[in-house]
Length: 299
Length: 329
Image (tube, rainbow over all chains, first blue to last red; front, top):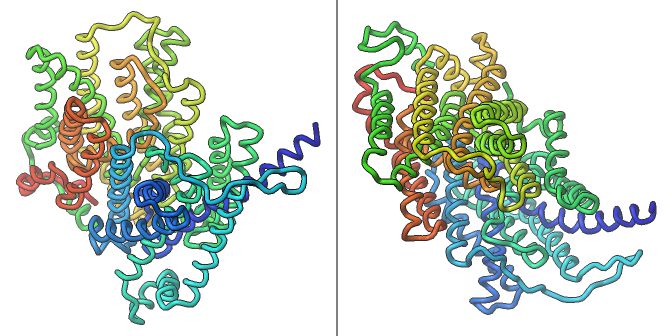
């Protein structure tokens, strides 16, 4: 009995690690957008869903190999994100600390999410799409646990993405500008950083991370047009847990969420989502300072 | 703040009964809506009567969201939580506990207010955006719990004798009239000034001696109560509640309606609910529900971009010089 419980825990940690790592990309995108623009992207979940469907579109309609389809989904989400921000949101609201403007942006993004979701529904219907795997087969980890190659490849892509993001933010000119801007807006502007470029870049990058996450998970889990709202909530929970505006916080928060989710899924499958959310929510409410200090009203 | 000080100046005597101003465009819209709802059954158009019942529920629902948003600056992205709870509890009490309809409705509404308010009260220290998503989180939790417990078919009233359409319609008019008048009275009372001060600046309001968390929590309970009334009525006339009442598109419904009609005044939710209810009940006759909600989303984006004050903003603009006070902080 004790052995099977421990085996369950071991299994859960492995699957939680992979799920958490991929879903942390989604949270990282949300965090990046908030850190720079001070706006919560309520359409983040819709871009996650779109990532899965764009990959499917790449494979089924453009007849691209699956790896290229993932790249296509990533780039298309970037272009779409930049386009929507440019067209829908008034420029003075791109970066704003005025609560009224922030609320307006959230409502526009929420409406956008609804439009994207229903639009996808009209085109593809309500069923889930089957995105092919990059590779088939399993490796057997110690203890007799089967891990699909797909999971390992998805983990590798996520880690690569983190390395890329890290290098981008550390070494490139725009990356440095983004970091400077999220640390001190006025000073960065005085040094010649253009607000609009930074906002467009970080929004595009943020939503394409969401799309990548959806794209990678679409071949492991199913994605339908109605997917996305749970993921928005999960991303929010991870971001709050790990600290807003911090990519490494999302990385850690994502893994913690993934493991908690996987453990509850092993022992109480029906309520796993509910329990994971409520557990983390209790942390959020009881420990509103410290890593969560940033999101609390300063009043 | 300057606007608040201006509001504190003694007002010129106006035609009205206490704080009800008879020439106020919002009051006129409320009276017109009531007259229209009384006239509709006599036209003999059964489908229109059915749409009106949706309108009653949605207008109350939208007013509850707008009260929270425009009068205490709290953006709820999960207003479906109290609405759905009201609907679910009412059906549950009638079906499982065999309570009479009136008692079930009252208890269901109170339960929705208690749970919705309590959940909301844990979020009042968060920034508006995060507060909205925190409430959304709970409505998603309930979405899953109700899906697991009651399945896709949800709960329906089978055992109790159904009320006649006329009775349900009359109940609707009464609930609609009372709730809207209640919201109108709150929006025109002196208490509004405290709320607007909180909305304008939490810190300044606190310094002025206003207990900010208390009033924010009070508004959450009040808004949940009103949304609960809407949800309860929705459950009574559809005799059904399932997990989709907690879905995000249902939370988005009052937000979009308030945006289209205009936020901050009672007339906004009424006009917005009329337009959107007709849109989402008439369009599916020719197109699918997805096309309807797609169009709805686009309408909200366009209105928010081109005319952020909504339709009531146009009507209000002409009346503004007449001394109508503005709710926007």
